[in-house]
Length: 255
Image 1 (cartoon, helix red, strand yellow):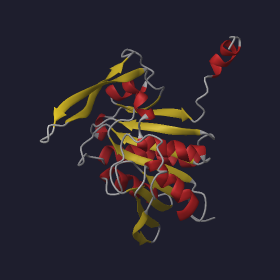
Image 2 (cartoon, one colour; image 1 turned 90 degrees about the vertical axis):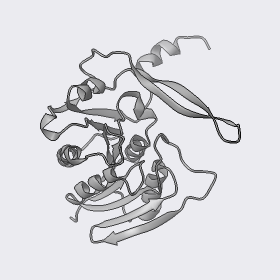
Image 3 (cartoon, rainbow, N blue to C red; image 1 turned 90 degrees about the horizontal axis):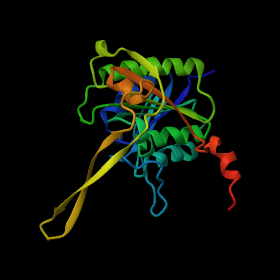
């Protein structure tokens, strides 16, 4: 059998440093095709482009690595790769390494994790990686090594169908990382605040700001706790949103 085929994408754009680090890790495992947005698509969640054409440009090609940029969203990148750009279904889909956290409820807004989820929808082993540092020149040395360890384990033992992994890595030196914790998503929400401003033409506009409101800061089995205490967090994400516990109680109600 030939080398595994690995699809790599992100939501920070094809020139992002985190993508380059993840691509090099993937090349140690198999043949790599990168399909990533032309520019930043953070916060796009599972959006797809339907009202304008989606364009793809081959940026480079060499032995074992082909890089494309795409005018669409992260999910567009995955869909185009699977439908048009790859000659077979990839063995693994990797998304990231994102510049910034995708822990807790951030997973529902994340373009990085939406790409991984799209891989899971299509029956592909998929992992999203994020570093808790939004800086464009963030240090990915420690996160790259941790991601490499996780990739080797995933390639060896796989991931169940319709599940993908949400991996977040604290922005601390490697020697300070205490290990890896498999945990659950923290309960909480983003408290949005809009900063109202006025442009030179006297028109109002708004910048989205806010903070994360953690409902359970003392819970030690959550991703936020793990990251705060120096661990890499891994949360298994299920594609099926159904709340099975509520099916029976809801079915007894008279609609």
